[in-house]
Image (cartoon, rainbow, N blue to C red; front, side):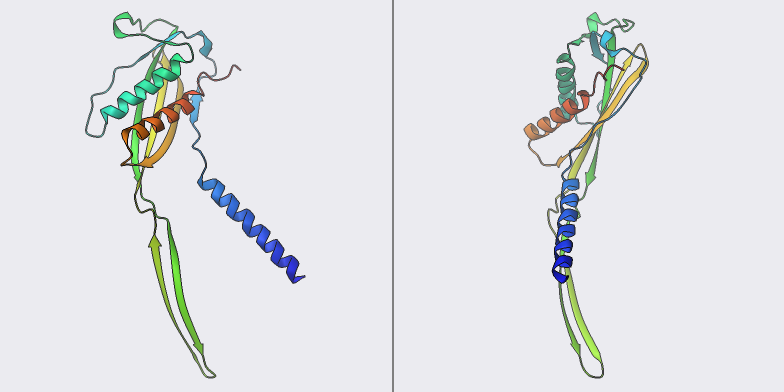
Length: 196
């Protein structure tokens, strides 16, 4: 009976650890909303709405990479990028694309504790001494970047999506570019939405 209880405890502990570990490594999922009355397959071209001025909080290198990633993803869907001089914003088959991103710092608070203790019990009393030390690991903070893409037609919002990625702030630019490309690709894989 005791052996069965121990085996059940081991199984439950193993399953719990597997669930916890699998939850920690999950891939972010894009969040998308769109107007279900729109036939997205009628659109042939897109343009980027005027960019907001660069401020201290906006990294122009990130902006340029996001534009590049969005352009690549949408041209793979046979949409054509229209340049300013050829732009007709009233054309019903042309989409307006805007985006922004937000970065927040996520401190890594992972740690593990070591505890030492001693207990002395006598016939008339007891005493105990304990010591615990928490040791942080991976104390570098993560930078969480959320990319938001909005698509409109003739001044009306028709598609909205967002997705995030995490990375160390001191990543080489090539790694940051790769994360931006993967995130935008994952996000725009949801565009156009499936036909209803």
